[in-house]
Amino acid sequence: MEPPAARSAIEIDRTIRPSGIVIQPDIPLCQTDLPLDWYQEEFKSYAEEYLALPDRKPETVLPWMDSYIHAALEKIGSELMLLAHYYMGGEIVKLVERYGGHIADSYQLARQAVLHPERKIFVESAVHFMAEAIALLAGPDQQVYITNPKSGCTMEMMAKGFMVEPVFEWLQGRYGDDLVVVAYMNTSGRLKALAGQSGGAVCTSSNAGAIVRWAREKGRRIFFVPDEHLGRNVAAQVGIPTDRIFLWPGGHEGAELSAESPPSQKLSELDRAELILWGSFCGVHTVFKPEHIAYWRERGYGVVVHPECPKEVVDLADASGSTSFLWKHVLDASSGSRIAVGTEGHFVRNLREQAGQRGITVAHLADVPLPGLGSQECGCATMSRNDPPHLVAMLDLIHKDQAPDLNRVLPGDMVDEVSGWRERLDPESRAEVAAQARLALERMIEITEAARPARR
Image (cartoon, rainbow, N blue to C red; front, side):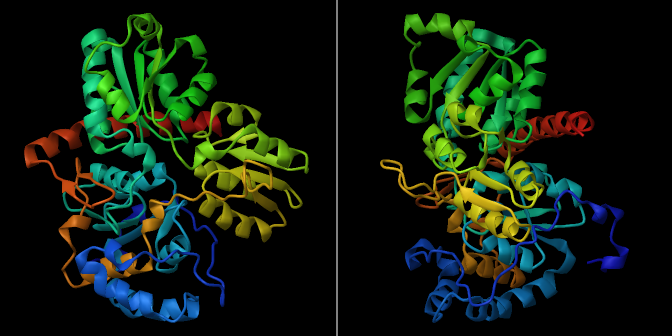
């Protein structure tokens, strides 16, 4: 390993800046304990130690974590990069930064292996598709691990490859080269490969408008996989009329529909469509309703939301954008501002803490005492399956050269989020998926970075 002074100039990369989030003394870690049988066999001894701790206060948890992680960091050194997404449950985002890691949105996370070729081991506390996106762009000398392979995404669960691929084949048979796939980042590498194969691109919530506009300018019929709400919001952004949008059902229903032609009355709508949406969605972002916005507006709050929210919510909000946009938008507000934020609950909780230090009041958009709506701060439950013992176990086992193969993420891997069962492609199929998916990811990066000067 090279000493820090000798490392490449690429170390000046500033795509991920420190969040400023800190762990407060005496405040218990906001992390729900998982049952012991939720841990894979190699992790159970670490989980037993964690569950036996007398409390979850930093003064208790951190010394236990330090006893393992400091030794691991000392051995692995500068070759390691720890990563987490903004939505990570509880205090994992704080813990990852404490140990020298970074928090970012899905676009920034996906680029880290490319931006940091000197890093050889990436350990991500997030959902599987995010770790796979890093693996798709990683070099042959770089390895990617996820702390919990059962950490999935409800939207991606309704858009598995075996569901979408038959539909893609049916649509391609009908429209030929006129069809192009835009695959949202919240998809597996297998679906990203469909985007590459069709000459399309991957997109994230931060660049979906630019990617769809690019595809539309080519005069192609766009198959947007998934999600239906982001798709509708982007369609409005780029000027696609509502009568030129076709919603294909998500999940098993959508897969079964491809076995026979859609009803004849629907075929004319499908043939007229510029944009075909795959009908899956994010359970976190679909809890928000216009009534939530009205409640906070009456109390003098501005409203910002994520574009995975239903279109009627996005239309009523003052602004919408990706997690990085929401974070920056709120923290750049003037002191005294009051803002209700419609996105994942753990993110809003950490944002509220940071904004409070700047004199900005933050509320979770769905946290209202209204009949039938309840008071809720919906968090991404599947992402929260990454907890302190998962992080400790992963780093300690890497340190001991005993990293479980189940946690290694390779292009094309498909994981069952309940059982942890994994289907891994043979080397030839994996290489084909990686090549096509990488094309789609690189096309996304090229379009996004080319568009940046115009947005400044």
